[in-house]
Image 1 (cartoon, rainbow, N blue to C red):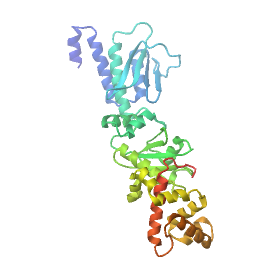
Image 2 (image 1 turned 135 degrees about the vertical axis):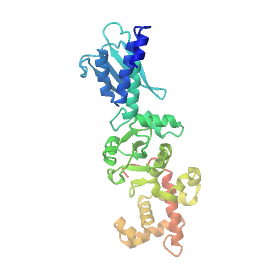
Image 3 (image 1 turned 90 degrees about the horizontal axis):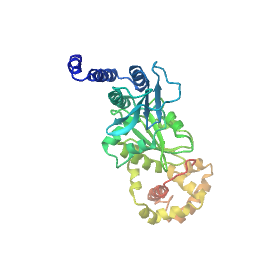
Length: 353
């Protein structure tokens, strides 16, 4: 490279300097420097303030010529260049040189931007839990192309070779707090979309969700499919089971595929909807369906078993389903399916239960 520079410098006095710039930034990229180190090296090399800004996180770095963070108010940029990753502009680099730009500033900014793009791709620009919702939507969107999805995951700090779990959350708790609890010490990003919170994480501990949180967990290989799984699992959550993993549903996930209009027209589901007007009857049916035992349901409800038996007789008449007699086995299956289908008609369960 130096020999080429010597020969070309006889033709253009700026070529040798330009090649020195290229070699300088190639060396930084080989050393795998992060954004802060890159900005510091650029400021010292350019002999003026150098800066980097990443759009997705709002993060800015300004380094003075002595290699320390610039403390003076920002001056107008003398030259700027966009940072691009996979043909998308993700940020900006700039120099704050007093007076006119230097003769090599254009090539310096070009290489500075390329090195910044490499650092973002390698390390990710953000270390916070809350993420840009637009990036999260790219990850979980069914219409996102794979290149855009992979780029968004890189920008969020997820390595390409790690699986990503997707969690759909309804809670009054801050999403960043929930993310830190259920995925301690591992990559996790959170965003609030229009109707539900989203967590992206490499691993999720379902036992660490705070009380009052409803969460559905999806773990398909593709994040968009994992998101659909998570939304489905969220619909199955309730006061007795606030956290549901989609793979634990098995065939129970099938009722979620039934069109809601068809579910509403089913006689058993319509009967449960009528029963829901009396909260204690709905609670009794839920306890009996959960346990399959009159006495266990009574224990769950803190009632005498004879009281629960009387309630079940009335509920059976309302539903038109035998729950406890010789046909009680089939009746219990019908009641469980009807109760599940009725609950799935409500897309926004109360996180407080």
